Image 1 (cartoon, rainbow, N blue to C red):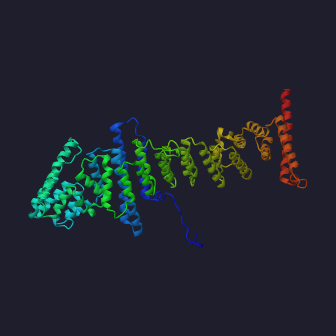
Image 2 (tube, rainbow, N blue to C red; image 1 turned 90 degrees about the horizontal axis):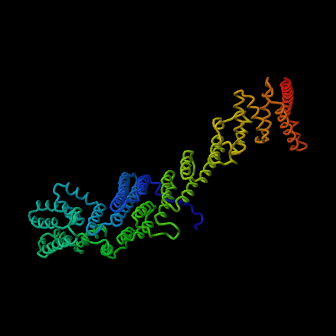
Length: 610
């Protein structure tokens, strides 16, 4: 709306496909996607679930590898702008992997009460990984217990449920500070005896809850007896282990985010939480952590939707928040294989899985090489995949013949007849413009385009008239049944055969073929004079090649040609008479025909007499 605005903004769709590192993500995940489509439908129960979990982990490993590479590039970036850009991409990939991992736990693993908390602890530990570098830093110092971050480290280890490591750190504190040795030993014993349902443990949830209740009562007794009163840090740790919400919220900075707070709260307050109750704890944890000071971010909404087991809301929120369709397309496909989306059809005729795969594949077609991956995604969309693939293949710019051959092979493998013809026509036109007649003829034959084959054949014949020889002899000599595509192509093939027979001195066969080309009306009239001129050397041979009847046919053709030319000329043009060369040709032909006729009559008469 601003007059004289000096800027033009180039709007580009699916810009992520142009990132070199993300291209690796697209390529690697393509192989996983194809493998997933081949999972045997007969597999049921645990074997099927195990395979689907393995596929999910494969997707996540690709994401993490991509994230690591992006992180290294961000560190090595020469300018701040590109460094920030790569760091932003790392954050996005980290959030994406965080969401995927949670969906894997809740929707694919479908962990029951007990193991669910173990999975959530692993989830938090994997994604809140600053503690490892802090641990190395503290342990690397001369006196770990005197390090400024010592108590922060112990607190984070307790918040993440890494109690064995926390006990080891407390033992260092006990060695360095004898005054607090007893307190460290008591708290260490509490950490050691905390009942946790381990993967190989056979105890029931009821047994676990009873043990946990006794353990919790012991923690409370120590707190009431002021066992840790002399050390605020140890007292704070004991309160955290009791699940004291106020004590947990005091560690907001160390917790970093509300979902870390949620998992720590569940660990020390509700270790046998059931999946159905997760969303209640998730919502209250979010509210407590934010405390009304800020609004939830898009990531918070996505995670909350997952905790509410609302798959469709997760996909919807991710579609809005993320800049490309990679994540939602692959996650939805995986969940569909878990048979979790069967009931959800979209109102415009396709299910959610197919819709998202179509969108993702369309984005891949925007790239000059990734479009080849998109073909396989379209192939696995049963309803609209083929139609979409046809439309996208037609729009691929055929910059090189190699690329065109790739597209052609894809179309031929899928019996896309119209697309094959269209591509062949385009390539034939390009070849004609570049004066590559052999290539043009080859493509027009492949396209089964009679009209274009006729056009190219005419160009061949015109070139022959101008230069006196054929180009691309190998192609013309090996036309085979393809020459039947059009009359002009048939003539071109047969005319070349005439030259071959003449070159091999098989004059009788050559003469019969030449005459049949003229009398069958397959030769274009404009080429008759050339054919009659080709007959001259045969007419002048020592032996009689053309019979009297054949000679009469040639004479008729010559007179027919000259009379028609006279009729077509304007009265004042008199082109034939003015053209000395043409006149000379006609006179030479008449003379040669008359001589041959006389010789043929004598020869045939003498044969009859004998």
